Image 1 (tube, each protein chain N blue to C red):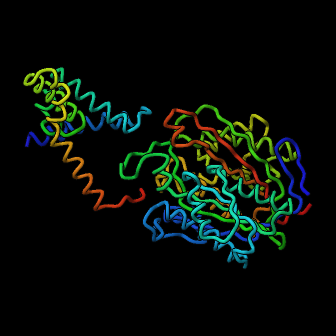
Image 2 (image 1 turned 30 degrees about the vertical axis):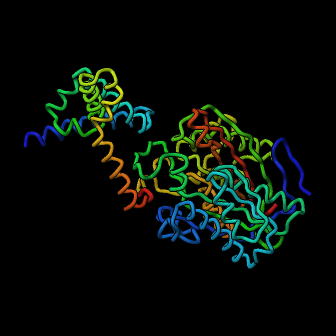
Image 3 (image 1 turned 45 degrees about the horizontal axis):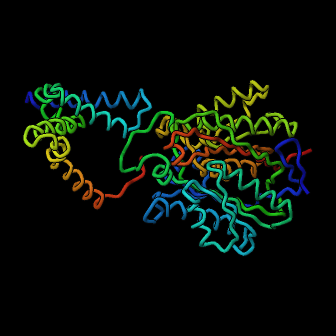
Length: 119
Length: 339
């Protein structure tokens, strides 16, 4: 139960940061997305984001910085294994599941649903 | 023959009459405060078509063909169709004109198109080049959102200053005879750009153009705000309307009691969550063909000034960080003024 609460709180804080950026800056949603993923990569590389995931569990790994974190960690692992080339191949290898799932489910959703005018 | 007065205004002496109007709006507009003034309110904003772009085309087609029917005319009687919209290459208008047997002149003035098409139409009538002209325009929330902002599928949040594109189309038939409201003056505006780059703040970007055109109209004609029962800007929204009032006051034109903004009136910002108000070509078109025209017929407004305002940006220009140029055209319409 504690895991659920922590995931909710940590994930929620990340979303709040996004909302504050939406409301107080002129950053477009696409830019905020890039900032979050890149932020995750940097924090992951510096081993700081590990703490977020340790306490927040899925609340830290599911949001956008979690994707950046996986990119960083996979690159580091692959570099250890195959050397410098790992910097280019590791990121996509490690996150292949997430990327493929996003494309697959995105496509399925596009087939099932039609866009509607906002209410 | 008409004549030029002042710097930017023409006086239309033959009084081209607006012999009929027709407008059609989406469900959200139909729930707004002006719902009694629309000829048709759609329940489904796709209007039975497969895409929002096709829906917009069907709205424009319906407005044009129904306005002609209402005037008891046939398509073949109309000498020119003057129309425009917001979509790339004016495709709503061109595709609607594809199904209409009327010579077509496409006009791009963004949301200023209603006053633009009405001005050009009045001048064509004045020049004796036409007996009947249809001036029309359209916009659709979802097609505009897709082109200018972000795809609806993204479900992104709207900025507080963002305006809501009106889903709707309005058409006016101009003729020579009959007891109807008629056009007396047209003031064609200049493009003004005060370097606003925020596409979520277009109403304010258009203020300099609106102020310039209204001021020039008064200078050219020697009129003042109180000569009009109502001066209606197109889609400046709440903020834009306030700035316009303040700026015109600096030029000693007190607009109080004679001024409204179509975009501010068409929605109930509080109840309908439309933030700064309505926008789009359809905004001033459906308010002019509905609320303003009907109140003229009923004698409530004897002289009005329609000032449709347009933001002349393109999706490419905003991606390249360009600012938003604005334009405004003013058309003076009278009915039953005793001189």
